[in-house]
Length: 594
Image (tube, rainbow, N blue to C red; front, side):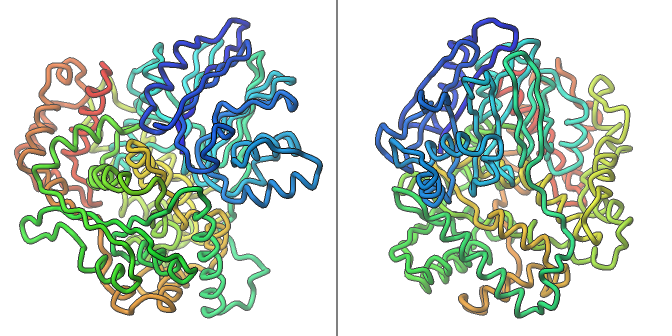
């Protein structure tokens, strides 16, 4: 719901309030309804506000409670804040607003660093404990809300976006070779804590970091499901799991209705978003606003799924908005989308989300979306074969299905000046999949998908593109209780029926059968998927620009090979290799990184 930023000086000097003001201004689109700046000797906090809960000035940030000795900036939404407020009132606390922001402050006053354990929602938090001269940074369990960090000797800056840190200045913008290795291996994903820039890191999901004014710092991960079978679920059959998952999903959808403004739904017509609409209708939400987007068809590939979204909208009588855009809208949208990216994002549908968010923001400030269901409930094609793979074979099976390039190919892609001297992506993959917990190979891969890959692909993509237009998107399938339940669910219930079997059984209770059993679809943007026409021209222009030649990031002969053979540019895992390279170079140029 906002953009946050700040600077802590750890060397006894005064924070650069002007730099924080520049950072805050760079996030204007995330919070068009207000701004604020606050300083306390060694820390300065900045905030841009999107009003969703407590629309009055009492909910403005930075929020300071002098009586508690606390100050806070916060991005996101705490869905259980009404229940927490009552619990804290019963403990003797008072409130001056009806905001979830103040509930976080009072929760810290009551429980100290354990306050995060009580929060249900999506959040990035910067809290100043004035008496202890301590800065507390926290990120939600699934990494739905971002928090970027830039550290130099004696100084820590944080912000909701990487470009905001760049606006503050004095950031090491050299390319991180390990992050580049990940980007080119994993569909443009760079897992936390790295970013493609050496001088910027991300606070990982479910992490609390405490920074003392003298420079000492510590971190702890406060939540991680085990991905093993829980004895409490012994004896549960498929019907019991359907009931349990259905109940948890209904709770997750209801939780994400908390707002003082209307809440809509991004309706693709796929199972996940359709199920959200159905459950909202079941809960009595009338005149629900739903939104779908489509593009021109090309080469026999459909550019929309309006048939399916229309069926859902008609069945549940939503106030439905069809948004159709032509290929001519795409090239200028690519440039605007790249500007909005907090990091380079190579998925072709990121542009579609940017365009969709622009239109949706004209009607609502909050919308629910179906992101995360595939990662949590084994919806991708590579999940099903893993049921027959031994636990120690997970890394090889995942790499074969997911990697765009192996380490050998990367030596042909990247100039030696930027090359990683070891197979960083395979090493990280092996370590993650071999970590304790995760009972089966599929459990290990779903843990990786949900807690490492997901926050830095679809979740980051949706947050960046929606907040570029002041739209807050909420993701019920990433509810912490639903994810924990899914982690304990036996894999056979998830991979059944071609994937997401237990979700499909829940859906059969409320959706027309043709929606449940339809072929799996993707966000169709043919002109971008194929990287041809004006989009190809844009990519070529970026790769051949003088600044690109000076940077020398990619080997010219490799780029020439991809340009000469469009079929060679398509990876076996589904990514377009030419688009990956061009998008990264275009992002670096857009953000004036040399």
